[in-house]
Image 1 (cartoon, rainbow, N blue to C red):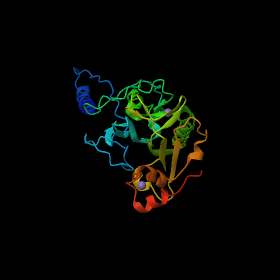
Image 2 (cartoon, helix red, strand yellow; image 1 turned 90 degrees about the vertical axis):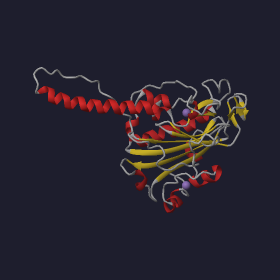
Image 3 (cartoon, protein in one colour; image 1 turned 135 degrees about the vertical axis):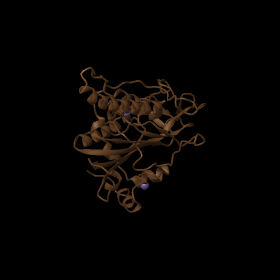
Image 4 (spheres, helix red, strand yellow; image 1 turned 180 degrees about the vertical axis):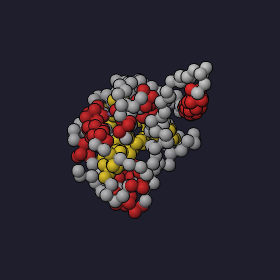
Length: 294
Ligand code: MN
Ligand code: MN
């Protein structure tokens, strides 16, 4: 459906260009009248930039890969775990043009593009559980269009997240990241969840929705900070700032996200993933061992 839509956009753009040429000819012809074609907004990013730093678990579009199924949503990519009912990780890119005036759509909904027969976690699957529907790719990172913002409300982008984690500590880190973008940086962010059992506002839970959604024990995030530019992967070097955190999915969490900083190496050890795998090994060795302290 989405591919068809983009093909349609390209076709429209091509025909628009053709019409403009026709217009140039018709202006020399007194009987020609200008053809008015409404402008077509292109996708915000021409190419999918969500996995530039790598695919941490080699997620694939093979439907047999039930625990590590790749969903490419355009505005972000997901490794989805069918039996946990939550993403393993979500990866996206943030640049200043991702920020616009689109209001929060709040259209939480099932992802109907999951393979046939897979349980679709719904808008109410976390209801009254004491856990928030916690975005991995945040709504506020995708405000350039209704389509971009809506994409973040698919339930395949959500984990059950303790309210104080989601709204305070995790949310503060999200806000901080946006200040970096507003200050002239672009970011590559990978966020995920692992383990089982969290403590929300109603206490401890291991699963929700009759066992179909696992409550993760921890959420983690890795943020690669680059000055705005092009050829991003090649600009990652030994001095590149990388912010990594692991936060407990516990409502008694400390407010200050900085107290949860760790190394990428430690997240890799905990999850078994290779994060930033497209970066050269020599550079990974340096930037993944360091703990941010700015
Ligand atoms: Mn959130
Ligand atoms: Mn790595």
